[in-house]
Image (tube, rainbow, N blue to C red; front, side, top):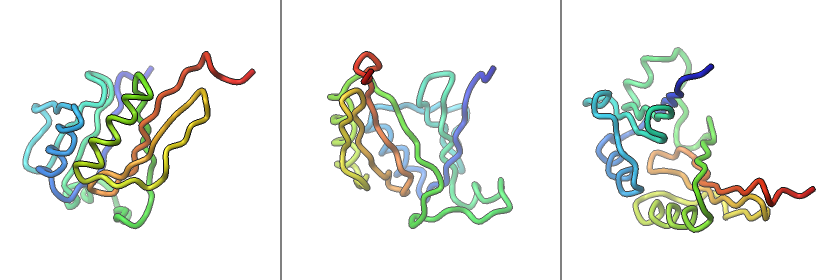
Length: 134
């Protein structure tokens, strides 16, 4: 059984990343933050994103680190409502994110897609399993 998940992402500017995610309403585990890394709390105690200075990130792999022109991973965050999707995306766009794909509405699932200031692609989604087609 998995106890927690740590997603590691390279970033160019830790302060810009801290400011961006703080404005979206997220917090950080300061015990794991320093001049090379931030521990972004996506779900307290179970899901974290380690935002690592690009040079520091590179010390953990022998492969090339993806740049802003490639997609290495798509990250999806489930929230509690369609309104929360729209609010979070609007706040992200106002604070340096870009939209890389228009919002999608499948009836039972609604999501919008942004790239954070470091180019990482995030899908903010709401789904209602009771609305799944039968």
